[in-house]
Image 1 (cartoon, rainbow, N blue to C red):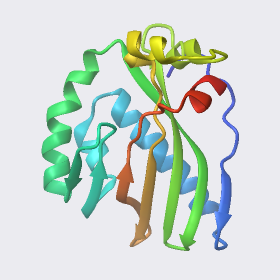
Image 2 (image 1 turned 90 degrees about the horizontal axis):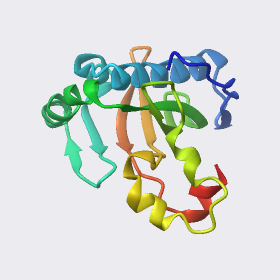
Image 3 (image 1 turned 90 degrees about the vertical axis):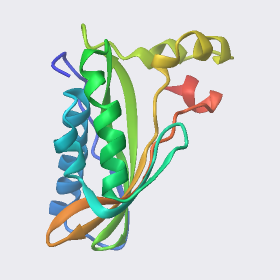
Length: 174
């Protein structure tokens, strides 16, 4: 977002040894996903997928292969350009399974386009956020996991699960 955003800590990196340039490339990849999502750019979003990728949406819809992912994305992403809410994406953790395969844990936070306020902050410190979750579904954050594969020097999604945060302890902790 263009609003002042707090400094983003470097992600935790675990697994097999990998060069910093790959960590940086993965962080840049996720920033590209954020840009594509915030600006409702289907082509830019779809450039990040392998042809044989598997994507599961936050609501559990499984999409298999780039043609299916593309059809879904071209339907749901363009209308988001007019939404008052978008999201930020921060890489929390990178597990290098192999030097060319990484599982990437992402913190996805809903944010207001007008002013850049993080909407999920309404849950912080609440003992029981259930009523707030029902009243403000747009404020529920996500916790995607991407399995990225590096093919010909380029990181792309091989598989991904985009999950909403519904666990009360995680949601209220911030």
